[in-house]
Length: 371
Image 1 (spheres, helix red, strand yellow):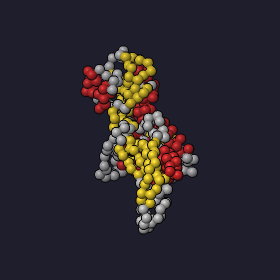
Image 2: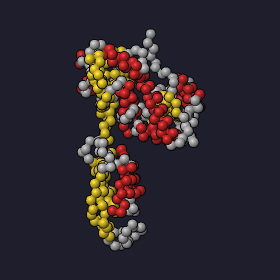
Image 3: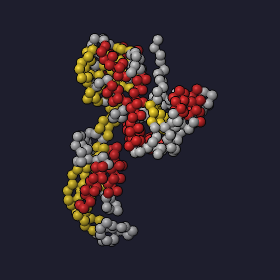
Image 4: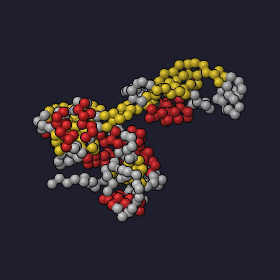
């Protein structure tokens, strides 16, 4: 059974939620429709004409890409222009294009984690925090006979986790009052009469991102026609999301040795380097894509070197003066997302018995040539 487009993207957004992307990032469905059976998914870094031809050859009618094909609002769509021809080919072959960019960078287990793992970084944290999944306290009032049902349903929805502890909750017995009015169908009591019911106050903790899911689970498992519940914001810090990663190496190496690690880990032949090749590297930062803006943040986190692309001349001089080394392997190193995303989508589709194939693009979209 082929998966619908909405199903594929649901899996994608569970892995890399749109809510964690940086503001104004061009993400989501950029061309085509998801309201169709997906005959194949092609995961690509960039959408070029060669990538589209690859999708056609593979009978893939959905491209999941990292870099947007539409950066600015279109004023016209002229098929005589290079980009217009690109859009025309996609439309003629009914190929949809979905973009997952900074949300995929930031996501746990996403681009920056894949890059950090490839470089051997341990105990990583974001270079710069972009958001956090703050905690809420969910409280409801439940007949004691249904406490286990409600509690288990809310836990199954992701509630009750504090650090490495799960199934966290508290309950206490009490008495609730209510009067069913005309048109009601009460679980207990009679219309027009004040009812006193033995109830349990049940409370647990949920991340904000699971608010709707947990509340829906609560309402579905609760026996009452009208479910009373409260949500309170908590000062307890939640999961932090951010761009880039900073972590320690298992063993100190010099910068020249770490350059070899970068070349091997990120599959590049050449890099640009700022700094003394004999300096010791104990802690390193990595940020996929263009990272000039984050050099100082990496230095503040204690990194001896930052691995990132698109470093400009003046940023390089500033870094040299500040004492942090730079390895620039190019923007295209984000190609690490192709096998990573393909694996995530394949596993989730297969787990739900879908037959839609997922392919990692084999097209090299590196625009620079080093001669």
